[in-house]
Length: 266
Image 1 (cartoon, helix red, strand yellow):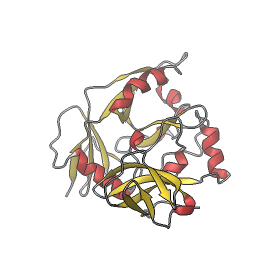
Image 2 (cartoon, helix red, strand yellow):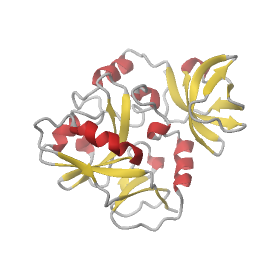
Image 3 (cartoon, helix red, strand yellow):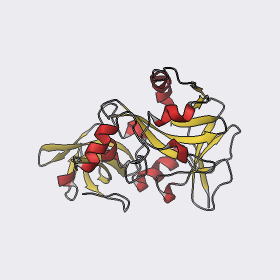
Image 4 (cartoon, helix red, strand yellow):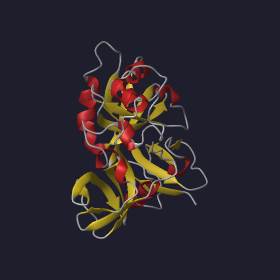
């Protein structure tokens, strides 16, 4: 059965103008030329130092590029992206006419659904001007993505602190290694080719009261990570690689890491 949920905490920004593709190519971590009808691209927008600011799904829409973003980040993203326009012929504006939906299960939903590029099991992203009938809630989708170990923007990453490869952007197809330069590329490439990753955002099973985001993760009295989002006994936490296979504590709960099949730990 195909499951569809409306995601009210998501919004859409439209980038239009003849330079829209080249403009975004120099700013985001992935190759937006891969965004074609039926297929979205997942990409991140970084600081010049290579730290995470935002991530979004990119879909092509005729003479526009649509960025599906966290609604709470639109007020930051539009002026921040606009800062880099310079002489580029682009316009950046909210596209409030769209509602955002996620779908998963089988069969595939009809257009305008676009495949979520991270994992086949993740499903599809849908941007629709007309309301769509749903049979699930945003909370159901949250549980679905947590079971898969998929990060959810600022709930799981820290602005100007998180590094893409710590959050699985390599394995989840959020980085292009061949498209050319983009803002923050140097640190992203260095962490990959020099093996500089010391911690990862990993799924955890929670035994006890769910810890709030930002709660320190402890091992024998030593802080080894930080709790991020959670729901119904599962969550994501950023922890050191050397403690992935041992029980941890977080607040009054015990955590056990549950690494998904897609995740590669060097």
